[in-house]
Length: 244
Image (cartoon, rainbow, N blue to C red; front, top):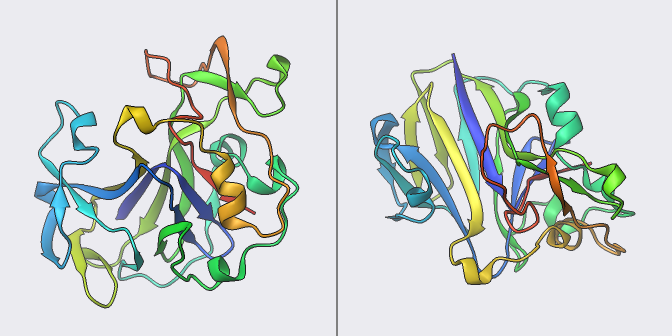
């Protein structure tokens, strides 16, 4: 049995040590969204409806406030060596490939909570893949000829050896069914605060970093992998990234 962790928004996935790094940025709200029927027990997490309104017509669910924490996933399984689907390797932008950045900030490597970091999620490893794509292609070079599809929602499938999965730190926990899907969203609430944020990854994750190219939408170039009918601005909707 597996539990799926889904990530959408300003989230950097470290594949070196299987940790999701939630980037801290003004106007963004970090939430864990879970269906009510999947929740077994909750202690210490407040809730609201942030990002839930985007899931129209779905089963009832709540948004749990998880920012400012170093959380760990307990799945009943030992840590495993993660595997990667071709879709993840191709369509989740790599900070190493998109910039000249090389040195991870020591506070990020040590999983410390600082102003530019909204939190961490440490997990035992699993299979990385892409769940959804942005409907419009983007270019990182500025040349429309380099238009490419990028991930909108990334998935990590964790093996579970227990009836429950718990996400916790020292003061709070949420326990869910072992086959639950857990959606982590770190995105803007107010459209007035929306603007291109991809550059935040470079400076939040790396030190002495010259930066890199932001993804720019290439008008009229539909990503053939997307099921979405509407066109979104990928830079504004904060695509995932990964490092290295």
